[in-house]
Length: 397
Image (cartoon, rainbow, N blue to C red):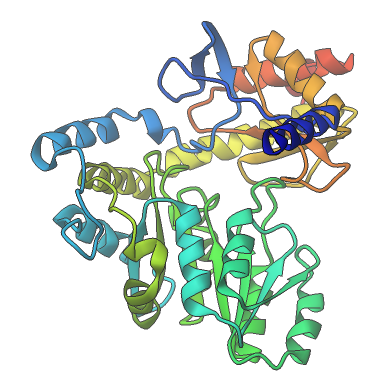
Protein backbone atom coordinates (compact mmCIF):
# COMPACT_ATOMS: atom_id res chain seq x y z
CA UNK A 1 0.00 0.00 0.00
CA UNK A 2 1.49 3.33 -1.11
CA UNK A 3 0.29 5.25 1.93
CA UNK A 4 1.94 2.89 4.42
CA UNK A 5 5.08 2.62 2.28
CA UNK A 6 5.45 6.41 2.36
CA UNK A 7 5.04 6.42 6.13
CA UNK A 8 7.69 3.72 6.46
CA UNK A 9 10.10 5.73 4.30
CA UNK A 10 9.50 8.92 6.29
CA UNK A 11 9.99 7.14 9.62
CA UNK A 12 13.21 5.56 8.34
CA UNK A 13 14.44 9.02 7.29
CA UNK A 14 13.70 10.34 10.77
CA UNK A 15 15.72 7.52 12.28
CA UNK A 16 18.63 8.13 9.93
CA UNK A 17 18.67 11.78 11.02
CA UNK A 18 18.77 10.81 14.70
CA UNK A 19 15.23 12.13 15.30
CA UNK A 20 13.34 9.01 16.36
CA UNK A 21 11.44 9.53 19.61
CA UNK A 22 10.79 6.74 22.09
CA UNK A 23 8.58 6.48 25.15
CA UNK A 24 9.76 5.17 28.50
CA UNK A 25 7.10 3.70 30.77
CA UNK A 26 7.17 4.57 34.47
CA UNK A 27 6.20 1.76 36.81
CA UNK A 28 6.03 3.90 39.95
CA UNK A 29 4.70 7.30 40.99
CA UNK A 30 6.21 10.54 39.71
CA UNK A 31 9.12 11.73 41.83
CA UNK A 32 12.87 12.32 41.90
CA UNK A 33 13.29 8.55 41.64
CA UNK A 34 11.13 6.27 39.53
CA UNK A 35 11.10 2.66 38.38
CA UNK A 36 11.40 2.50 34.59
CA UNK A 37 11.72 -0.81 32.80
CA UNK A 38 12.39 -2.52 36.09
CA UNK A 39 15.24 -0.13 36.94
CA UNK A 40 15.22 2.48 39.69
CA UNK A 41 16.31 5.73 38.05
CA UNK A 42 17.27 9.18 39.32
CA UNK A 43 14.96 11.43 37.29
CA UNK A 44 15.82 14.84 35.81
CA UNK A 45 13.16 14.60 33.10
CA UNK A 46 10.05 15.87 34.93
CA UNK A 47 8.43 19.30 35.20
CA UNK A 48 7.28 18.54 38.76
CA UNK A 49 9.28 21.55 39.94
CA UNK A 50 7.99 21.69 43.53
CA UNK A 51 7.58 17.97 44.08
CA UNK A 52 3.81 18.29 44.50
CA UNK A 53 2.89 15.40 42.17
CA UNK A 54 3.54 13.01 45.05
CA UNK A 55 2.68 15.34 47.93
CA UNK A 56 0.50 13.47 50.42
CA UNK A 57 -1.76 16.47 51.12
CA UNK A 58 -2.55 16.74 47.42
CA UNK A 59 -3.01 12.97 47.08
CA UNK A 60 -5.36 12.92 50.10
CA UNK A 61 -7.39 15.82 48.74
CA UNK A 62 -7.93 13.96 45.47
CA UNK A 63 -8.77 10.69 47.23
CA UNK A 64 -11.38 12.38 49.42
CA UNK A 65 -12.80 14.26 46.45
CA UNK A 66 -13.25 11.07 44.43
CA UNK A 67 -15.56 9.74 47.14
CA UNK A 68 -17.69 12.88 47.07
CA UNK A 69 -17.58 14.01 43.43
CA UNK A 70 -16.97 10.80 41.49
CA UNK A 71 -14.39 10.06 38.82
CA UNK A 72 -15.61 12.21 35.92
CA UNK A 73 -17.35 15.47 35.04
CA UNK A 74 -19.67 13.84 32.51
CA UNK A 75 -20.04 16.81 30.17
CA UNK A 76 -18.50 20.05 29.01
CA UNK A 77 -18.50 23.05 31.35
CA UNK A 78 -21.35 24.67 29.43
CA UNK A 79 -23.58 21.61 29.69
CA UNK A 80 -23.57 19.90 33.07
CA UNK A 81 -19.84 19.52 33.71
CA UNK A 82 -19.07 22.69 35.70
CA UNK A 83 -18.87 21.74 39.39
CA UNK A 84 -18.48 23.78 42.56
CA UNK A 85 -14.77 22.78 42.88
CA UNK A 86 -14.15 24.10 39.36
CA UNK A 87 -15.73 27.44 40.23
CA UNK A 88 -13.80 27.64 43.51
CA UNK A 89 -10.51 26.90 41.78
CA UNK A 90 -11.14 29.53 39.10
CA UNK A 91 -11.83 32.15 41.77
CA UNK A 92 -8.72 31.17 43.73
CA UNK A 93 -6.48 31.26 40.67
CA UNK A 94 -7.76 34.64 39.53
CA UNK A 95 -7.13 36.10 42.97
CA UNK A 96 -3.68 34.50 43.26
CA UNK A 97 -2.28 35.35 39.81
CA UNK A 98 -4.14 38.69 39.55
CA UNK A 99 -2.88 39.95 36.16
CA UNK A 100 -5.20 42.96 36.56
CA UNK A 101 -7.70 44.39 39.04
CA UNK A 102 -10.76 42.86 37.40
CA UNK A 103 -9.31 39.45 36.58
CA UNK A 104 -11.15 36.18 36.14
CA UNK A 105 -9.77 32.73 35.42
CA UNK A 106 -10.97 29.89 33.20
CA UNK A 107 -9.96 26.23 33.48
CA UNK A 108 -8.87 24.05 30.57
CA UNK A 109 -7.97 20.37 30.35
CA UNK A 110 -4.47 21.12 28.96
CA UNK A 111 -2.22 24.07 28.30
CA UNK A 112 -2.28 23.19 24.61
CA UNK A 113 -6.06 23.65 24.50
CA UNK A 114 -5.83 26.85 26.52
CA UNK A 115 -3.43 28.47 24.06
CA UNK A 116 -5.47 27.31 21.08
CA UNK A 117 -8.50 28.91 22.73
CA UNK A 118 -6.76 32.24 23.32
CA UNK A 119 -5.46 32.57 19.78
CA UNK A 120 -8.49 31.36 17.87
CA UNK A 121 -11.00 33.34 19.95
CA UNK A 122 -9.17 36.66 20.12
CA UNK A 123 -7.65 36.94 16.65
CA UNK A 124 -8.87 36.36 13.09
CA UNK A 125 -8.06 37.13 9.46
CA UNK A 126 -7.77 40.91 9.84
CA UNK A 127 -5.48 40.65 12.87
CA UNK A 128 -1.81 39.94 13.53
CA UNK A 129 -0.04 37.79 16.10
CA UNK A 130 3.60 38.59 16.89
CA UNK A 131 5.37 35.55 18.33
CA UNK A 132 8.84 34.93 19.73
CA UNK A 133 10.74 32.45 17.54
CA UNK A 134 11.20 30.11 20.50
CA UNK A 135 7.57 30.13 21.62
CA UNK A 136 5.99 26.81 22.52
CA UNK A 137 4.42 24.91 19.64
CA UNK A 138 0.86 25.40 20.93
CA UNK A 139 1.14 29.20 20.69
CA UNK A 140 2.26 28.87 17.07
CA UNK A 141 -0.39 26.28 16.26
CA UNK A 142 -3.08 28.49 17.79
CA UNK A 143 -1.87 31.44 15.75
CA UNK A 144 -2.01 29.42 12.55
CA UNK A 145 -5.52 28.13 13.33
CA UNK A 146 -6.73 31.67 14.03
CA UNK A 147 -5.98 32.64 10.39
CA UNK A 148 -4.43 35.86 11.65
CA UNK A 149 -1.13 36.93 10.15
CA UNK A 150 1.65 35.25 12.13
CA UNK A 151 4.77 37.41 12.43
CA UNK A 152 7.72 35.84 14.27
CA UNK A 153 10.46 37.98 15.80
CA UNK A 154 13.98 36.97 16.84
CA UNK A 155 14.16 35.38 20.27
CA UNK A 156 13.67 37.93 23.07
CA UNK A 157 14.49 40.78 20.63
CA UNK A 158 11.96 43.37 21.72
CA UNK A 159 13.55 46.03 19.52
CA UNK A 160 12.92 43.88 16.44
CA UNK A 161 9.34 43.46 17.65
CA UNK A 162 9.03 47.24 18.05
CA UNK A 163 9.90 47.73 14.39
CA UNK A 164 7.39 45.10 13.30
CA UNK A 165 4.61 46.63 15.38
CA UNK A 166 5.34 50.06 13.96
CA UNK A 167 4.70 48.76 10.43
CA UNK A 168 1.55 46.72 10.95
CA UNK A 169 -1.90 47.81 9.83
CA UNK A 170 -3.67 44.96 11.61
CA UNK A 171 -6.98 45.61 13.36
CA UNK A 172 -6.03 43.69 16.52
CA UNK A 173 -2.50 42.93 17.64
CA UNK A 174 -1.49 40.11 19.98
CA UNK A 175 2.06 39.69 21.23
CA UNK A 176 2.65 36.07 22.28
CA UNK A 177 5.56 34.84 24.35
CA UNK A 178 6.62 32.12 26.73
CA UNK A 179 7.49 33.60 30.11
CA UNK A 180 10.11 30.92 30.84
CA UNK A 181 11.20 29.30 27.59
CA UNK A 182 10.68 25.58 27.92
CA UNK A 183 13.84 24.36 26.17
CA UNK A 184 16.30 27.13 27.12
CA UNK A 185 15.12 28.09 30.60
CA UNK A 186 15.60 31.82 30.04
CA UNK A 187 13.00 34.49 30.82
CA UNK A 188 11.30 36.76 28.28
CA UNK A 189 11.79 40.56 28.48
CA UNK A 190 8.27 40.94 29.84
CA UNK A 191 8.60 44.52 31.03
CA UNK A 192 9.67 45.69 27.57
CA UNK A 193 7.00 43.59 25.86
CA UNK A 194 4.26 45.07 28.04
CA UNK A 195 5.54 48.57 27.31
CA UNK A 196 5.27 47.81 23.58
CA UNK A 197 1.75 46.47 24.07
CA UNK A 198 0.81 49.75 25.75
CA UNK A 199 2.45 51.83 23.05
CA UNK A 200 0.92 49.98 20.10
CA UNK A 201 -2.47 49.12 21.63
CA UNK A 202 -1.80 45.37 21.67
CA UNK A 203 -2.56 42.53 24.07
CA UNK A 204 0.29 40.53 25.61
CA UNK A 205 -0.30 36.77 25.81
CA UNK A 206 2.09 35.17 28.31
CA UNK A 207 2.51 31.40 28.54
CA UNK A 208 3.76 30.97 32.11
CA UNK A 209 3.69 27.16 32.13
CA UNK A 210 7.21 26.97 33.58
CA UNK A 211 7.06 29.99 35.88
CA UNK A 212 3.77 29.51 37.71
CA UNK A 213 4.32 28.02 41.15
CA UNK A 214 8.06 28.67 41.06
CA UNK A 215 8.70 32.36 40.40
CA UNK A 216 7.18 35.44 42.04
CA UNK A 217 6.41 33.65 45.32
CA UNK A 218 4.53 31.13 43.23
CA UNK A 219 2.32 33.66 41.45
CA UNK A 220 4.46 33.44 38.35
CA UNK A 221 6.93 35.31 36.21
CA UNK A 222 4.84 38.47 35.82
CA UNK A 223 4.56 38.78 39.60
CA UNK A 224 8.32 38.38 39.87
CA UNK A 225 8.67 41.32 37.50
CA UNK A 226 6.00 43.33 39.37
CA UNK A 227 3.77 43.59 36.28
CA UNK A 228 -0.02 43.88 36.11
CA UNK A 229 -2.20 45.27 33.34
CA UNK A 230 -5.53 44.86 31.61
CA UNK A 231 -3.48 44.07 28.51
CA UNK A 232 -2.17 40.83 30.03
CA UNK A 233 -3.57 37.40 29.15
CA UNK A 234 -1.82 34.75 31.24
CA UNK A 235 -1.89 31.02 30.59
CA UNK A 236 -0.31 28.55 33.00
CA UNK A 237 -0.43 24.79 33.30
CA UNK A 238 -1.42 22.87 36.43
CA UNK A 239 0.49 19.66 35.73
CA UNK A 240 3.99 21.04 36.24
CA UNK A 241 4.77 22.95 39.46
CA UNK A 242 1.16 22.43 40.63
CA UNK A 243 1.67 18.68 40.35
CA UNK A 244 -1.78 17.64 39.09
CA UNK A 245 -3.21 18.31 35.59
CA UNK A 246 -4.92 20.93 33.47
CA UNK A 247 -4.36 24.63 32.80
CA UNK A 248 -5.98 28.02 33.22
CA UNK A 249 -6.20 31.41 31.57
CA UNK A 250 -6.32 34.52 33.76
CA UNK A 251 -7.19 37.89 32.26
CA UNK A 252 -9.66 40.78 32.34
CA UNK A 253 -13.25 39.62 32.81
CA UNK A 254 -14.18 40.63 29.22
CA UNK A 255 -11.40 38.45 27.80
CA UNK A 256 -12.49 35.48 29.89
CA UNK A 257 -16.15 35.92 29.02
CA UNK A 258 -15.20 36.01 25.34
CA UNK A 259 -13.42 32.67 25.77
CA UNK A 260 -16.46 31.19 27.53
CA UNK A 261 -18.72 32.27 24.70
CA UNK A 262 -16.54 31.56 21.67
CA UNK A 263 -13.55 29.31 22.42
CA UNK A 264 -14.08 25.98 20.66
CA UNK A 265 -11.43 24.15 22.75
CA UNK A 266 -13.47 25.15 25.83
CA UNK A 267 -17.00 24.74 24.53
CA UNK A 268 -16.51 21.34 22.91
CA UNK A 269 -14.33 19.59 25.51
CA UNK A 270 -15.56 17.52 28.44
CA UNK A 271 -14.59 19.20 31.70
CA UNK A 272 -11.80 17.71 33.77
CA UNK A 273 -12.95 15.65 36.79
CA UNK A 274 -13.99 17.80 39.77
CA UNK A 275 -11.67 15.69 41.95
CA UNK A 276 -8.75 17.22 40.07
CA UNK A 277 -9.99 20.69 40.98
CA UNK A 278 -10.12 19.66 44.65
CA UNK A 279 -6.56 18.38 44.47
CA UNK A 280 -5.50 21.61 42.78
CA UNK A 281 -7.08 23.73 45.51
CA UNK A 282 -4.81 21.93 47.97
CA UNK A 283 -1.88 22.26 45.57
CA UNK A 284 -2.51 26.00 45.30
CA UNK A 285 -2.41 26.26 49.08
CA UNK A 286 0.92 24.41 49.07
CA UNK A 287 2.22 26.80 46.41
CA UNK A 288 1.20 29.80 48.54
CA UNK A 289 3.10 28.32 51.48
CA UNK A 290 5.95 26.97 49.37
CA UNK A 291 8.76 29.43 50.03
CA UNK A 292 10.93 26.71 51.60
CA UNK A 293 10.46 24.50 48.52
CA UNK A 294 11.35 27.39 46.20
CA UNK A 295 14.42 28.31 48.26
CA UNK A 296 15.64 24.71 48.15
CA UNK A 297 15.05 24.58 44.40
CA UNK A 298 17.03 27.79 43.91
CA UNK A 299 19.92 26.32 45.91
CA UNK A 300 19.87 23.17 43.77
CA UNK A 301 19.94 25.26 40.59
CA UNK A 302 22.99 27.17 41.84
CA UNK A 303 24.65 23.93 42.93
CA UNK A 304 24.16 22.31 39.54
CA UNK A 305 25.37 25.34 37.60
CA UNK A 306 28.50 25.57 39.74
CA UNK A 307 29.29 21.89 39.30
CA UNK A 308 28.61 21.96 35.54
CA UNK A 309 30.63 25.06 34.74
CA UNK A 310 33.74 23.12 33.63
CA UNK A 311 31.90 20.66 31.39
CA UNK A 312 32.87 20.77 27.70
CA UNK A 313 29.30 21.43 26.59
CA UNK A 314 27.54 24.81 26.58
CA UNK A 315 25.27 25.39 29.56
CA UNK A 316 22.69 28.00 28.57
CA UNK A 317 22.13 30.91 30.98
CA UNK A 318 19.14 30.16 33.20
CA UNK A 319 18.09 30.89 36.77
CA UNK A 320 15.10 28.56 36.43
CA UNK A 321 14.59 24.85 37.02
CA UNK A 322 15.21 24.21 33.31
CA UNK A 323 18.94 23.73 32.67
CA UNK A 324 19.87 23.15 29.03
CA UNK A 325 23.21 21.56 28.19
CA UNK A 326 23.72 22.07 24.45
CA UNK A 327 25.59 19.21 22.74
CA UNK A 328 24.91 20.17 19.11
CA UNK A 329 24.80 16.95 17.13
CA UNK A 330 21.64 14.85 17.40
CA UNK A 331 23.39 11.50 17.75
CA UNK A 332 25.88 12.90 20.27
CA UNK A 333 23.05 14.24 22.45
CA UNK A 334 21.27 10.88 22.33
CA UNK A 335 24.53 9.08 23.14
CA UNK A 336 25.15 11.30 26.18
CA UNK A 337 21.60 10.74 27.40
CA UNK A 338 22.09 6.99 26.98
CA UNK A 339 25.42 7.09 28.84
CA UNK A 340 23.68 8.77 31.77
CA UNK A 341 20.85 6.22 31.55
CA UNK A 342 23.33 3.41 31.89
CA UNK A 343 24.54 5.12 35.07
CA UNK A 344 21.00 5.19 36.45
CA UNK A 345 20.21 8.83 35.57
CA UNK A 346 17.39 9.97 33.30
CA UNK A 347 18.07 13.29 31.55
CA UNK A 348 16.36 13.38 28.15
CA UNK A 349 17.96 14.39 24.87
CA UNK A 350 15.96 17.06 22.99
CA UNK A 351 16.37 17.35 19.24
CA UNK A 352 14.85 19.28 16.29
CA UNK A 353 12.21 20.32 15.57
CA UNK A 354 11.65 20.96 19.28
CA UNK A 355 14.91 22.97 19.27
CA UNK A 356 16.72 24.59 16.33
CA UNK A 357 18.92 22.41 14.12
CA UNK A 358 22.43 22.04 15.48
CA UNK A 359 21.38 22.68 19.10
CA UNK A 360 20.40 19.19 20.30
CA UNK A 361 20.74 19.14 24.05
CA UNK A 362 20.06 17.54 27.36
CA UNK A 363 17.13 19.24 29.05
CA UNK A 364 17.81 18.84 32.76
CA UNK A 365 14.82 19.62 35.01
CA UNK A 366 15.44 20.16 38.70
CA UNK A 367 12.82 19.72 41.41
CA UNK A 368 12.48 20.78 45.03
CA UNK A 369 12.07 17.05 45.68
CA UNK A 370 15.70 16.48 44.70
CA UNK A 371 18.41 16.40 47.37
CA UNK A 372 21.88 17.94 47.16
CA UNK A 373 23.26 14.42 46.72
CA UNK A 374 21.02 13.90 43.67
CA UNK A 375 22.48 16.94 41.96
CA UNK A 376 25.99 15.84 42.91
CA UNK A 377 25.33 12.42 41.37
CA UNK A 378 24.22 14.06 38.13
CA UNK A 379 27.24 16.36 38.04
CA UNK A 380 29.60 13.43 38.73
CA UNK A 381 28.02 11.37 35.96
CA UNK A 382 28.29 14.22 33.44
CA UNK A 383 31.94 14.76 34.32
CA UNK A 384 32.58 11.01 34.04
CA UNK A 385 31.05 11.02 30.55
CA UNK A 386 33.21 14.03 29.65
CA UNK A 387 36.34 12.68 31.31
CA UNK A 388 36.62 15.64 33.74
CA UNK A 389 36.38 16.11 37.53
CA UNK A 390 33.12 15.77 39.46
CA UNK A 391 31.68 17.03 42.75
CA UNK A 392 35.15 17.91 44.00
CA UNK A 393 34.53 21.14 42.08
CA UNK A 394 31.48 21.76 44.29
CA UNK A 395 32.99 20.85 47.64
CA UNK A 396 36.09 22.97 47.10
CA UNK A 397 34.08 26.19 46.67
